[in-house]
Image 1 (cartoon, helix red, strand yellow):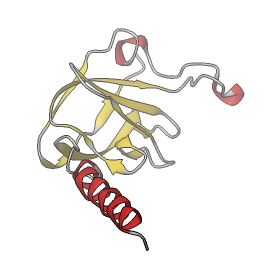
Image 2 (tube, helix red, strand yellow):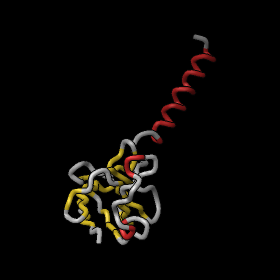
Image 3 (cartoon, one colour):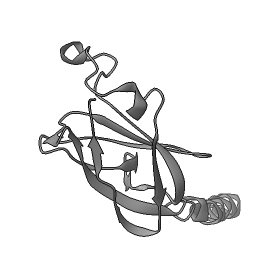
Image 4 (cartoon, rainbow, N blue to C red):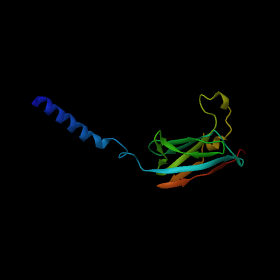
Length: 133
């Protein structure tokens, strides 16, 4: 290798090493793990969308399982929600789902939600017992 090629290779390696600290999860915000169960009139509510909306920052969401359980995801590779207060919205009519056009959940739980949650660092459990009347 010529001295110029060696110097160029050194600069390339140095540039890679300097840029590495920005990669990975070092920049991830503080999240709390969030799980729970959603029921409607005492029965599990399957295939419902659960959204945790912080005052600032990215929301977290989940879809309930057949038993009404959910686990929030902040992103494709991070579970949880931002630590702090959240407005919570729960609904069943999901855009693009032909089989779920009728909303089963009253507006007070999504459009004019009255649900809130305070996510703390660590594990959190928020169960929501919704009433249709």
